[in-house]
Image 1 (cartoon, rainbow, N blue to C red):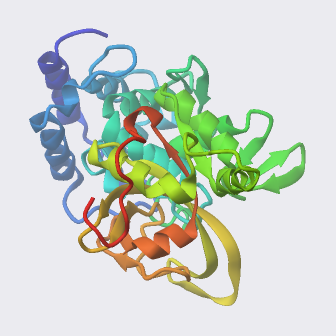
Image 2: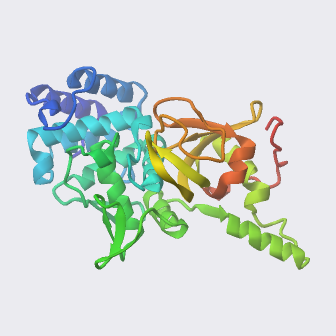
Length: 367
């Protein structure tokens, strides 16, 4: 495509100016509080003002080029209709300008939603490139690993099961669920993976998530789990020193603290004793020992709490075992450090950002 960021932005703005069919004409979609053009224009100003439109993707192309591709290029037949093209661009630009709106809806895609949020913040141009590829005529996007992410959804219309998850997030997360298990098929409606006609489960196990994470980011990641901690204890009983081996129980907070201080969130799985309500849906027997992926943003040592992004975007406390505080409508939450340590099942982090020689922090003190 080529062109300067300025010329591409002018092309994008000029194309949007010609659009006469607002996305609110799509059946079942509720018009945002402000007219869609004003909302879109404001979001583009945010991206332009802080330089994100000029950020480069894995191919060295600016973010705005992917937006122009969606606005003017060949898309899947449904997306190519005026309503679909408008809606796709509108939702992607909103996700980029306000990544907090990304969530998993009522689906078991917490890991994929966390990755989507991470990418929208840490590598927005790459996120835009992948989305543009997924809704293009080919329905494919080449990852940093050289593998392909393939679109398995051609739906922009909302439904009850999505509850709050926007259609671009649906498309991206479903593609991630497909990629993580190459031998399985993911059905978004049933929210399950299948092998042939047999349902084999939902969500992403640790190995599948790490495969997805490495392929999408193109970076090495280290995963520590409670299983590693148990192995370390076993070695210690045999008199084998494990001081040089990372241990979740001993080193988890140190890893989280150092990584997040350097601006790098950490993916964490918390093991929930019981799920008592889900987005306001309560009743029946609680779900026991559920695993949930979150994105750890920081540790507040002075107030003794961990700040994190919950991809469910909860409106109320929905699980037992932690004194959770919901800080905003976009999933920003916190819980006491002691509660977090008790629930922590595993973390995925950038190993090069952790200096094991530094003193390990202790809860209740300053880091």
